[in-house]
Image (cartoon, rainbow, N blue to C red; front, side, top):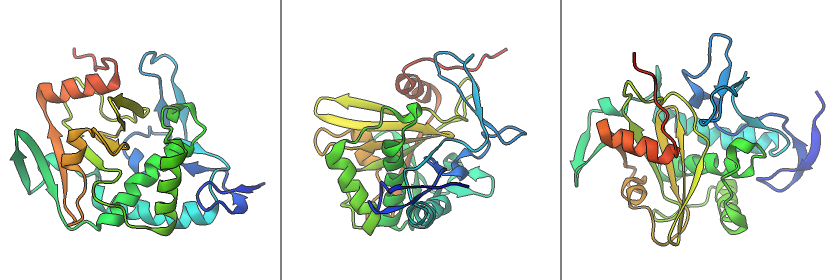
Length: 256
């Protein structure tokens, strides 16, 4: 197998670059592959344009083996230990500790290694930014934020609690909603704030980028330095409204 020599986009050293770097960790595709271990990707506005991929979405010649298979893989394995159970993503609706604050029901997750988990979450966003695939075209962090996150990932630097906040939101598996999919990330600008959101296999991942006028739901639910994480649980019409507004279209199963 021929490997290309180039500059790794994480360590910035000239090395052999991997031909396949998964943008989203392979374990996050659990339940999305068909019997031939292929996953479908289709534009929401035209489900006739379906393309099947054997290994999910990956990019080529952006990362070296050390950065991808050691540094980032270590973060991804830790993220898996928090979010993933024996049968795929943990069902946060069945969590032992659920509380309601200001009308928002959330599962409470404790015992998290704060910085490691936050670096894991940011590593997904960073790889989306690096990707040359059209699927991730809306993720453009700009030079300032991309470089700052790159340095954090490379050196495992501490990230302040109010810096690059990340929330994970669980949406109820309602009969008329398609949640077992990966939705191409959306960039949303509100006033002076920029945030990103993507749906991965029933969980929404939301990232505050701008330090001002932040999206309040992200701030309230972001992982804390004390190792706790609140996972909002969206049900019924609230789930449908959230789903439709962030999908920018109505994608519903046909109910017979």
